[in-house]
Image (cartoon, rainbow, N blue to C red; front, top):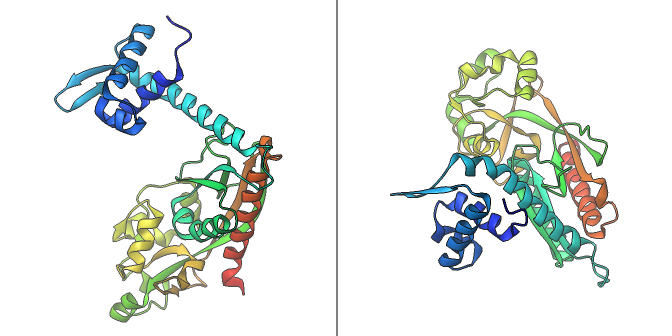
Length: 302
C-alpha cells in the first residue's frame, strides 16, 4: 500500500461521497471531472480497494469507502485547522485578522449570534467567521471548531471556559393564538391547548420531566427536535411551546404563559482550546461573543 497518498485525493474522495458523482465533486472542488476521476482511480490503486461502484443514480460508496469516511473527515478537519491557525497567528499585520470557526446550537446560531457577528465584522472586517450550527457537541480538542457555545459544563482540562450565565426557558404563545383560544390560567388548562414540544428524549429533557411531568411527549400536538422549528411554530400561532424568555420581544411578540409554573435555565458557556490563547483573532472573537451573550441573557432581568 502506498503510504504517501496526497491529501487532495482524499479531498476528492470526500467530495464524491457527499455529492454522489464525479461531476458534483468536480463542481464542489472547482476541478475538472477527468481530474476528479483520476484522483479516485489513483486512490483506489494506492489502497488496492474499490471505493465506488456505478449505478443508475450515480456512484455508490462501498463498505470500504464508508469505513474510510470518518478518517478522511478527520484529515479534512486537520487541514482546515492548519489553515485557520496559520492565519490567526499572522505576525505581519497590525490589524486583527484571521479565520475563526464558531459552533453553536441551531437556536443560538439563528436567533442570537447574527447581530453579534454583524457588529463584530463591522468594526473588524479582516476577521472571517465560519459559523457551524449543530446540536452535536463539536470536538474542540481535535479542533473541529475554534470557539464553542455550549449548554453543558465543559470538563476537558485543555479548554478555556467562561461561564456566561443561565438562559431562561419559559412557555410562550403568540398573541394571535391566545386571542383564538384564550390564555391558560392553570396547568390543567394547559393540557386543553395545542402544545408544541420535543420528539426524542435527551438527558436534559429527561431531567426536566422529573420536575414537569405535565409536559410529557404524549401531550404534544406537534413534535420536533428542532428548536428553530418549535420557535417558528410558536410564532406562527400553532400553539404553546418552550423557548428562550429573551425571544419573547422579537419581531413577532410572544406572551409568557404560567411563568410561576414553568421556568428552566440553560447554563451557557463559551469555550476555546487553550492552544488559541495567544491568537489575537480568536481571543478578540471570544471576548466579543462573551460580551454579546451576557447582554442577551440580561435582557429579561432589566
